[in-house]
Image (tube, rainbow, N blue to C red; front, side, top):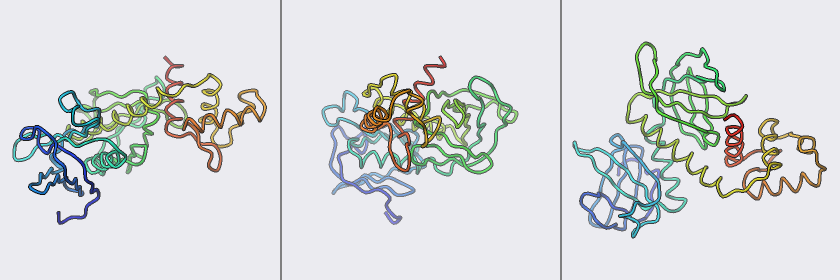
Length: 287
């Protein structure tokens, strides 16, 4: 590739499910414009502009004998729809998947109503234009519509239709936690393909956090501590909130840090897992 590579690693893949039954070993090289799957004998080029779906999941039944996890890239080239499958295990592949979504979505024109709802109340906010960017742990809106969706606090999202500037348009409705409680942000992208990809990205991050959270057991006191840190920030007085002495608070915090829910860096802060736990708790209370 003549352009600079932003990802380059060796793994197993099926370059085209229509022509290959078993995986081959080779290099995956990605630039800002394309993904190349290269072996000693051949290479397959996937133009990012043709990608319409990306999935990172447990290998389906027919591929389970070859892979534990897979990244499936569906794309169109020369008028044909094709599918490539890449081995999906390991942190390198996790970073690759994020780079793929960034390459597909960063800078996309977006019309957003932020917020469309505060709690259950519809706001009078209008749709404003801007640009969408994927940043660590969040979807960021820049331009006239400044906003941020912390993906660890997403509790629900769906594709719906709304009136946008006089015409009915499909959009993504995302419920998440804002600075002052639950809010809903509505997003319209400039193509159905990119709407699908953004929905896929949010679902991927949402599912990953929820799966990790299922493995964490929390007591009521630990949940109260997390909510206090979320509400009051780094200077939260947990002893006062929980009604316990300092030694008991230290024990709580050590447990929460061990569970990767809290980090103690210039004060107490929730990790993405901690924010997800708080969002889940608040959502349960509001149901």
